[in-house]
Length: 207
Length: 207
DNA sequence: CAGTTATTGTCAAACATTTAACAACTCTCA
DNA sequence: TGAGAGTTGTTAAATGTTTGACAATAACTG
Image (cartoon, chains in turn purple, green, red, orange):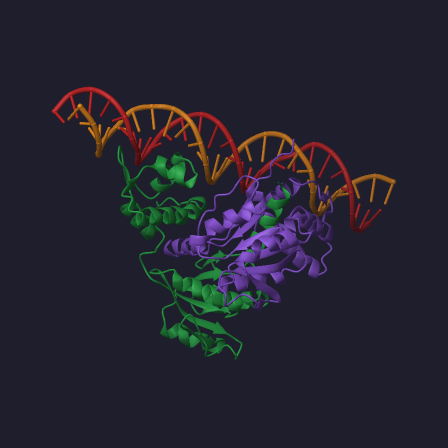
């Protein structure tokens, strides 16, 4: 029944959302696929095609209403609801991510950090307490958690991921440099910084 | 003359590199595309096709020599040479990235951090000094810098990127949530954390 | 050392994505 | 209010990517 929408399209949606947000801030009321294509350096055809995957948001002869389209894409991306996030591994990167998420106003909220290091336990990062890993199970029983961010060394990542899944977590934002093996009902979004850096390195040598 | 290799292929190379590194650590001497395909959950055909973009690294009836292939992919990705990296914006994320890069042994070396915040100037992060932004120009004259990492608020990112390009930087690892407009000879690799989080959010709502 | 098995490199087919083209429709302005 | 300009949604073509198939060849086995 429902046609699956390709990840190629999904990857582009946040970018549309960002540009529309900026247009909204600049009090632009309407925009055509052609104008937007110039702004974003993609083809107008792709914009229309992409948006049409989700329905007809525009109007012939007029274009798209910026506020309406921004809202709709927000809904598509699930940004109209709050996501509670916890983070495992309150190291350097973990703390940076904790801060980062709390800046993403409205849709994501960091509600707990976890670490095995006793020295970190009890501290707060960006107003959020660091708990010991042993408290994780209890915490998950008491709080609705939508996303777990994994910012820990790759050696522990697989094991922790498995535990998280057993405890009912179904979405993992994975910063560990490893491919997690999880059941089909669990979503993993990887941020592999090394891979990104290597890709950059490749592209440097090509010029 | 030279056929351009698609970014789809390039994106996969670091992953091959990682798996081959792990095999190497496990003292595996040879591997067939079929075995590797099972390990990585991709088709054997894709592996052979990908590798053949760069030349025939395997041997019929034998497979691929793990060490040789690992080395070759390393060379393709430019990891056989040292890249000096500087970082602009020594905030939370910047410090985490500085640490991270210095862990990536062998190929990347963080040699300087820069910030406008006087309080941060003079400190060291992961053994690297934080300089004031005003020293950037001098620093670039005295040091060979291959990559600049941008970890600063988006409002300043475009301006700083422009300055970097004018000072001769040709590779930018961009963590700011903005699309940088740079000349053709400059390579930009984006890490848009918000986009990644939104993609995750979308995929959650789809299950 | 000959026969059998394994495995690559590569060609072609299948599939997916992107771009172009245009009919249908709406808006604007005289 | 009607003609012309503008713009979408959608279909079809072009392009790009992935998969399957297999000939060529090397390694292994007895």
